[in-house]
Length: 209
Image (cartoon, rainbow, N blue to C red; front, side, top):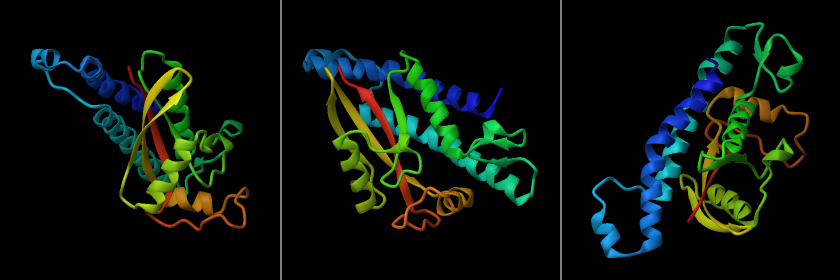
């Protein structure tokens, strides 16, 4: 089983345990009756708690991949390296951000997942990571101006109301910030990232009833 498959499996395992609970909670929120609340005997979870949980799993696996796979290969001077164009090479593996995006795409294809996630940045090297909505732009600005804080909000897209959580995406491994700082696509005003700097945001979007 590949690392990416194991990551997705862990996320779904977490979601499987949380989703049944969140559905019950959101249903009760929609009813808003004391009878519904008093009839529940099981644990409940809010959309924010659900988002916090899946984000914790995602970031744990991403940190392990960046630190113990990508960085270690570089330190060991291995012939195998993390490279943006890994698909064109026999001796390359995906960058941490690419691993993350491929996992997000698999979840997006699963209509039963009940949520989506993505990377966003105010300084995207890949256009796919640009903020797509006004709320996403507001969230990215907030997490940069308020170090240590997450952003939580709601937005309507089409006919659906979504809970949106955006978490700071920090430079956790040397491979992360050196790749960004040396990237040929960076402009003159691109930040010089260092360890623990906020390089963007991890977005989790959950449809509300």
